[in-house]
Length: 394
Image (cartoon, rainbow, N blue to C red; front, side):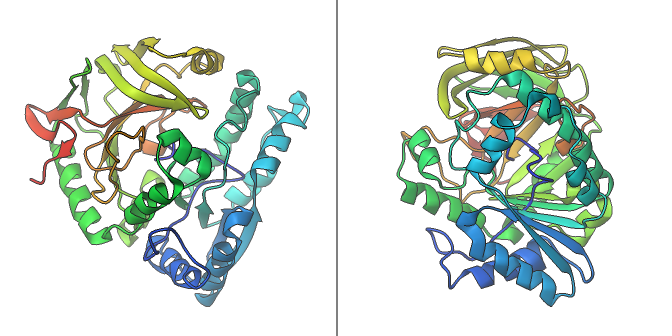
């Protein structure tokens, strides 16, 4: 999940299946849009559907709107760009940072679905902005996302932190073409197989209690998940998901994640990741230490000062262990020797701190940090689910 949920404009959402390896060509977007609207978002007649994205994907957004209208539902397209997102921060007076996003809240009160294609080419877009400002703005947006969950608004997001941009490919140390191939392979993964794997992993988590995560890099973390709600992002928002509501009405694409929030105050131990990116810059050897469900220490081999500055600017709740996320998508393959990190690659173990309402928790802190472990072992009550980065098939 792309840090869970970042409210951009108003919300998060999007999906696509059946694309060529390097992404949608003009001839393919109509087919993609049909899949998004009919299968993934499961749009119904008369629903109000907000469609959000950038100029890069204009034709896809327009085709989505047409497919929405074919069902007798009602589309509204909104556009964003790096330039606009930056100017709305740096060119707007600080005194408005705490102002509620009134227009977004009005939309959150009436829309039935939000379909978003990830916008953003520059991971350092706001790196020079005072973290205090970003925290105040995030805090002001909280109410919008809370309203979307309360109203069971359908939210799908195409991108999930893996959209193939030039900057992201450089960050991972691979070509943009290779990243695009990985991305679309992940998006095109068999949804029925993802659903089956997701339900199997979900049952394992629901029936278990004590989780232990270990890895050769010094990771040794324990937490309790007894009787906690478990959610699956498998690429399709089903009728059952609609009925369950809240976090169940969200999908991130490429899909393939099972996630759960812990019993409060139970996370104990150390989680270490060799590769972590903050604002597009590499931080090597990030080490998170937990006691009684709270972060007690954050260190790294690399320069951690920008991350620490953002963490220190966040309000209370930033330090609380947020969620455990397990990747289940076998089509997202991390190239050997690369610096690629992501959520949904099968066998990936992700943990984080801060806000966790996206995962069914109650921490509304406007800050979160998630780290991904690719070679870890995860056991539940002594039974191995992931062994050295490999998700067991049974």
